[in-house]
Length: 196
Image 1: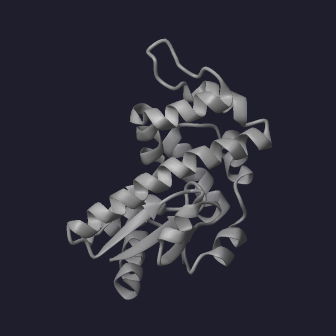
Image 2: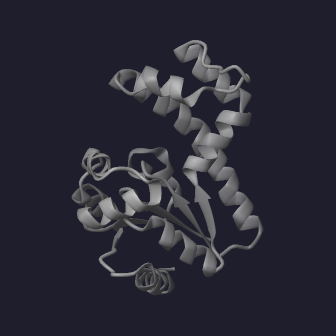
């Protein structure tokens, strides 16, 4: 089974590529969803976070992600500690999901992670793909998808790593300069059929 790592900045078209993975019978492992699920259910992760950062529960007893964010995002050392704790849990769960896919006879699986290249997840992948798109196109997509202002969308785009970071550190780059999602879906499908 081939494990494909997919990364790239927000609004570039990763979701379209992932939909094509599923359409061709592959599995998709969304690392954001894995992390959020672990925050809800994994008591070992919850305990590790509270040992490191103090009480984090909301009134319903769940880990308060916004509170955790306020603690770490202005402090690079704390953010690094959070990432180390989170990645250990996420990588373990992703490994288990990959084995489940293998057991189900899947020919390939895609690991979707914005921080794929900075994390141990990269080591689980046989191929890595950067999905990139022009900045102004990404801004329009983010505005439409999330209902945010153009200024805020530009701030999000500028806060992310440059395209060169993704293209230089991945095995392949899939550039989304297509005028429609359907055309990019076709390009993504051709890429997958050629490379998997």
